Image (cartoon, rainbow, N blue to C red):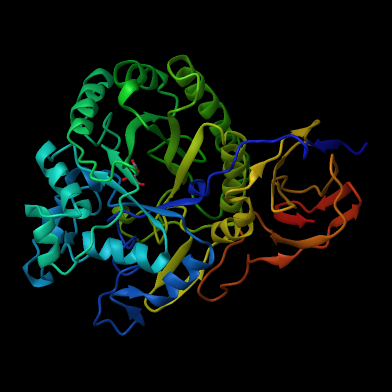
Length: 484
Ligand code: AHR
C-alpha cells in the first residue's frame, strides 16, 4: 500500500539557516595548499593566489561561511606567523597533519581574500590550547579594530586599511582531546576567561561566540559547560563523524566496501538525530528559550585513507554513499532548525567528505557537492513539517520560500525503488525543477577519467496533481523537487 505523508504547508516552521551549509577548511593535506591556494605565480589560473576553478565551483553552491584555520591545527596556530611579506613568514611543522612544513603563505589576509571571492562570512577558530588570551585578543584587534590601535596599525602596514568582519569566533577546538585534554569544568572556566577578553568593537553586531562542545554522545560535557558557562554562550559546537565500522583504527574503505558497511554508514548518519535531540534537551534545561544555538562545526564521513597517500592528509574517495550521508544529515539539521544554526562539513576541498577534489590543474565535483547544490533552495526557507509514516530507507525534508515548496528526498535502499505519496495543505500546480543523483552501484563515484559518473540529472519520477504528489524514487538516489 502507498504510504501518505502530509506536508503541513500552512503551519509556520522554523527558518533553515543558510549557515547549515557551512564549510570547514583546515591546514591539512591539500585542504588549502594546492586545493584552494596555489600562490600568485602558479601556472594554475588564479586570482591573488586562489585557484579560479575552485572558487567558481564553490560560488555556484553559495558557500555561506568557511571555518578556518582548524580543527586541531587551530590550537597550534599562531596568527602572527601568517602575516606580512611571505618570504619573512615563519615556517612551522604541522604536527597534527603529516608532519609537513607549513610556510604560512595562507594566513589571515589570504583567508579574508578567499571570503571576499566567495562572498561569504568568516568563522575563525582561536588557539586556546597553546596560545594565550593576549594573542587571541590581539588577533581580533588586528582583524576588526576600525580606529587607531597597535594591531590596526600593523594590519594597515600589511595592506588592509579597513577592518574585516568576523562573524563567528570559536574559542577552542576539541578541547576535550587534541585541543588540550581538558575536563569540562576546566574548559568552561577557560572559555569564560577567553570570552571576557574577546574585543567587541561593533557593539551593534557583536562577534558570535562558539564554545567547544561535546564529541558524539558526551552528554556530560554539554551539561557541565551549559551549567558553568551558560550565561556567556552564544552557541556550543558538537563534532560527530560517520565511520562505517565505528572503529577509528579501521574505519572502513571509501570504495569496494561490503553491503553491511553501506547499512552501518546509513545507521551511523541517522544517529545524528538522536545526538542533536539529546544535547538540545540538556540545553533546554538551562536555555528553554533557545537563545543558545547548537552548532555542528565538524561532521561528515571518515574512512580509511586512500591507499598510497600520506596518512595525515585524510584523502578519501566520495561516492553515492556520501551523497546519502549528506542528505540524511542535512535533513536532520533542517528538522532541528529551531536549535541548530550552523554546521560545517569536514572539509571543503580534498579532505574527508569534500565538495571538490583537485589534482594539479584539474578538479572534480563530488556527489556531496551535488547534494549541496540541489539543496540550495532550502537555505533561509521555512521548514515544513511532514506527518505520516516514512517508508523504510527513505529520508525527506521540505521547506517553503517565496511561494515555492522544495521537497528533497533520498532512497538509501540498495535495491528497491520506492513510491511515496505526498499531500500538501496548499495547492501547487507546476513543477519548477526536478533533479537528482542516481547510481547503479553503491560506490559509484567521480574520477578524473570519469568526472560526471554521479552528477545532477533531470528527474522525471514526479506526478503532480494539485496538492497531491507521487514520487517514484529509484534505489540509491537523492532528488530535489521544487513546486509552485
Ligand atoms: O577534520 C579533521 C579533524 O577532526 C579536525 O582537525 C579535528 O578537530 C577533528 O578531530
